[in-house]
Length: 299
Image (cartoon, rainbow, N blue to C red; front, side, top):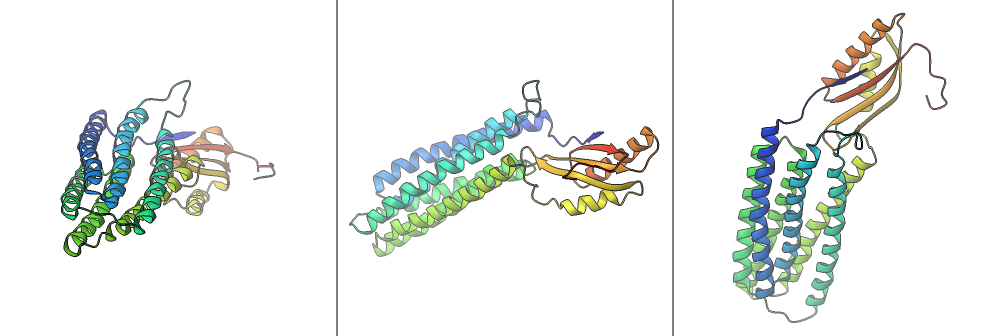
């Protein structure tokens, strides 16, 4: 017996989220172009490193728009679970691209530390300030309007990390402007790169956990097992699995040994368990009621 709870946002909410994500993506795309031009014009590797992270923000925002469209599509005969796994696949690919960009920035930073390269501190300060404002505002705006969506929240985390990177670049530009110490710029670029690698690692780890059907964060399997066997008519629970297709919607399957003489009574038990599990945040519950102990080797 399956018991489902509908936690999907309304069509209007989904449309609003896609619109807001598209607006944020447009603003950050303009900032990216300006940052790249400024990084080349002002000779700032730190600003260029921040541009790499900014590019990841733009990609993640457009990816979020696409994902919001894909996961809203209903299941079909070809994709019976829908397309919710697109979220994790996109996140994993994005993490790989981020890591590659970070390696290039570090190599260039090492090369510049041993050479003489002038940096326009004032230009770096101006562009970094713009990046800090745009990323900070975009993150707060999206979180305030759509904080319930993990897809949107993932884009928000990217924006917050890039705002932090812009802050580091801003400080390095100010130091270059005040002390004329150009070596601060490549050092700052390594700090920004560390932020990029940290973000990429978290994104890859989360994506792989979803793709490998890991138990979702915040779910205590032993607690759920105890909840089910606490029912007076349940003597055993096995083959208990919990996963998430998209990192948000939780799904549970399991076999329940029921002490019941009639099918109707067994159905009442699984219905009762499904309701209790739903109250624990499990969106989709599928339970197989059994009247005899499982004899399979892995029970």
